[in-house]
Structures are given as C-alpha cells and as structure tokens.
Length: 179
Ligand SMILES: [Zn+2]
Image 1 (cartoon, rainbow, N blue to C red):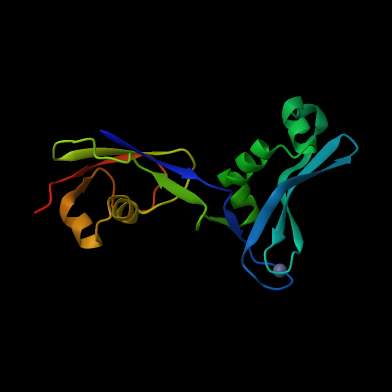
Image 2: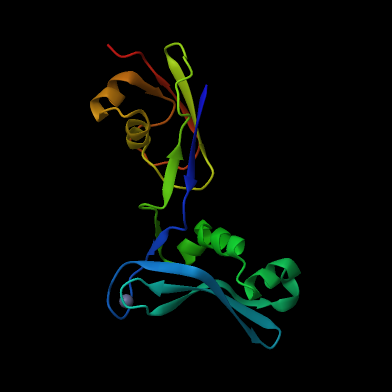
C-alpha cells in the first residue's frame, strides 16, 4: 500500500463578500483575534482582511460567553494570537457556518507522494490520508498524482469512494496495469 498525504501549505483564503468593494476574497493574514470584555462576558473575534481593499471584518468566534467558562490556555491563545489557534478556528466548520463563508483552498495545499513506485507489482494500492481538511475530487487528485488523463483514471482506477464527489476524508484506490 502506497501512502499519499494531502496537507496544507498555508491557510486557505475565505470566500466572503466585502461590504465595501464587493470582492469575494478575504485573508486572515498574520492571524489576529480581538477579545472584548463586557462585564463578565467575553466576545472573541477572528479578524480577516479583504484582499482587494484591506477592509477588516470580524468573524464571531465566541459571543457573550462567561469569562469563567473559558479554558485559560485557550483564552491566553486568543490574547497572544496563537497561530495554531488561528488555524484551528479558521478550519472549524462551525465558524464558517456561523459567519457564512467558505474556504478557498486554491493553491493552499499539496499532495505528497512517494517518489518511486518501489517496484510494486500491479495492481498497486494507494491510501490517501488528509492532514488537513482540504476538499478534493478523487478523480482530479489521482490524475494529478499519477500523471494520468481523466480517461485513464476512469479506466484504470478502482476507488472505494465516488471519484467525482469532493471529500476530505481518507480513502483508498487501486491502480490497474496499463495497456
Ligand atoms: Zn474590499
């Protein structure tokens, strides 16, 4: 079984319409949170910036949450703009759902494959693992990873998931010998 790994190379952009210039792309940039205390309640936002006009928007991470209910390490992370916390919040589907944006993974990930086929006998089995939740179409990923045309993929690949349905969950496939 050959291992393939999908991993991000940077944070994805956000597909989010700017209220000023109507661009539909925003970035977390270096990654900053804003924490605002209102009595014993805290609001936490993740700041994002329009890639066209630089307008800053706030995405709600926590809204009027009692300060005492925060994990102290997490709260510290918000205060120091911990990069790990920035990425885990950005990639959390709940944040996207609540703030009505989707992630734009274009150019933000790569596929790592073993450099050689290691003299495997046909058919070859490949296991695809995802280090980050990048949605890919198996058909396109396999064509790219093996340098095959789409027709060849349809002819030579047996896959345990739909080839055309986007997924970010691990799957396996089998490559049959060519002609
Ligand atoms: Zn803008």
